[in-house]
Amino acid sequence: MHPIASLLLLFLTLASAPPAPGPPAAAVRTPRALWVVRNTLESREETERAVEDCVRIGCSLLFLQVSGRWDAYTPSPIFPPGESLAQPPEDNLAYAIRLAHSRGVRVHAWVNALLAWSAPDPPRDPRHVFRAHPDWFLVGPDGRSVVRLSRRELDASRLDGYFLEPALPQVRTELRRFILDLVTRYDLDGVHLDYIRFPAAGYGFQPEIRARYRAETGIDPADLYARGTALAADKGEAWLAEERARWEAWHRAAVTRLVRLIRQDLRAVRPGLELSAAVLADPRSARDDFGQDWAAWIDEGLLDLAVPMVYRPSAKQVLQLLDAISRVVDPRTKLFAGVSLEYLDAREVAPVEALMGRYGADGLAIFSYNMVRADRKVLSRLAQPARVAPAEAGGGPARSP
Image (cartoon, rainbow, N blue to C red; front, side, top):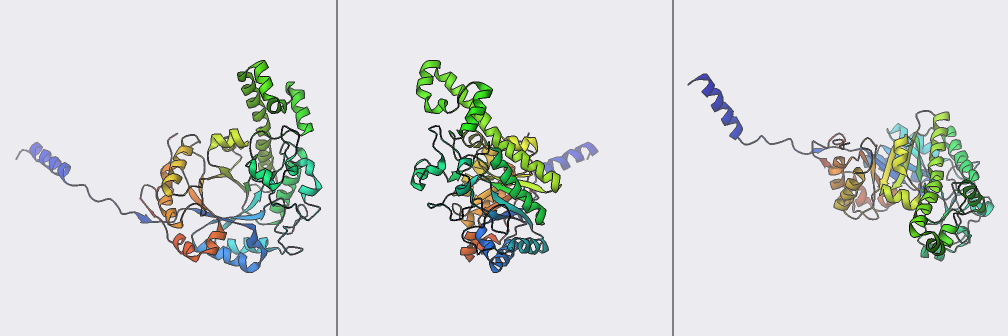
């Protein structure tokens, strides 16, 4: 046979042969983080158990809550102790960090940044910001502070609780003092911000802030809401929408400024310390409705890790939401997909991990340890590594720019 004919026959034979089977899905452990709620720090035994369970389910990062409502679950000269703690609280944070580090687990101090209270009754401690500085809280356009609202009124307004005003320098300074005290006294690997946002749009009208905005723009921002109907009739709906958007951009810049200041503080005292944040899943809604412009924080380099809370009841819905996020966030963003066991059955975690790399998620964060602690079947399910297809093993393909 002619040599060329032989080569052609060989080519056709190979082309028509069935493809070789690809490598099977590999059982690999994708990076995992675990939110550990502050009650764990109430005893050394619970602290030890939490770290051991964290290791058992393959977590290499703990978001360990040290402050839930502008209180402290470790000795602090800045915030009063949590009301469920013994007086004074035990220093289980230092112990937790040492134990976690000995097992190869990093620890971020989890701090609820602007949510200062949420219980029906006010805090007992007179040092708590709710009692000591009620003028630091958000104010509605009617001039009424949120601290004057009952828990029932908060619920009716769909507010998570009593939020502080980040445009006030006193609020920014006190929170920064608390965080600086933590990172200079403890061998932490990072700080994790939660509730770094407003509870809703339409708040932020302390006299001081109104005066400042009026001096800059000639407009009282409270009028844009309290007198919205009259202003729309007088100046037009388009004018009102534009001025409200202008005010909201000005106000949410205060949240970004707070994140920026915390980032600068960490770089000044502990270069290399990480800053992470739990953020609302929809970047546009987070920015426009809650003042949380976390996509811009990423672009500015303020966050090392963003954890969008993709709290949905099925793997399919979680992945759909991750897909939507991937379309509007910089593909270089380091993201952990935050899932809640209040919504997602533990059996659905593996399918999320198997596919989340396709949508730019670098790891998984699980809320919360309390649910793992309460149901050992959940722990056993989470202890099984997900079977990740080879394309996703090692973090998955990067998203297209």
